[in-house]
Image (cartoon, rainbow, N blue to C red):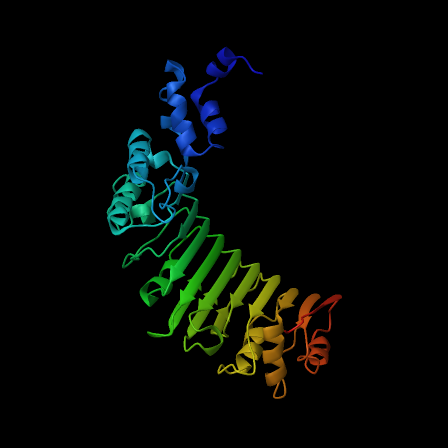
Length: 341
């Protein structure tokens, strides 16, 4: 065991680095250990708040802990907002009053910037941002969002096109983007516009309210010359238009398609044609089924493809030789058997 006096002799920067591996509520609790520790937590750069780590009374599992937002506000009041590099918060249930408080809390991180409703948009220090809730986000009319964010993860429920058409074109440092979107059957077609010269990895996960019988529709336009990896998961085929994917090497297409689908299967062919410079391709059984319905008219050349992984079942064996003959430089093939119950 390391003697206490040796730990106390460490500079605040070292102590904060050690404490950054603990939940923030545990770090703040160290202030009662001794006078030396009273203000150490105020130099934290990584903040983690999770109400699941707090004790709950019976019947409170779906409600936020009393005092949870007060504690977050107290911590942010005692720290230096502009020095915060990671801000993580999990709340079991966001009540209306807490959303208002949360907006105020987030303004503390950005030194009271007033560029947009959630002022985190302007923070120069945040590099990793995960928004996993149905926040109402308003993108500024012009300018830059999240200037130094390199990793952006978002969960969106019935998103507005004002958001999905602008936000992913306004992050100048973005390298990794992950979008999980839930669409309902009502409203206009959802449009995702992703344009970035720095983006290297992109994951798009789209789920619809009606699943196989959904009336939802979405379109995706991607312009990303530095994009290396693209992963698309969806329970319906959207319309895809991609440009300048000159660096693309790894593509995973996990999209559902069946006999009952009202979507044109030619979308699968059109998508492959736009991704034909990738060297590695993985396609789900749904994609293979769509290709099997559409390949009779024409099929794109996959001239750069070296690795192919395909999920096969009762349907798709007819189009498989066509795919192989179009992949003249193929080096490895993996077939995964799918059992449809």
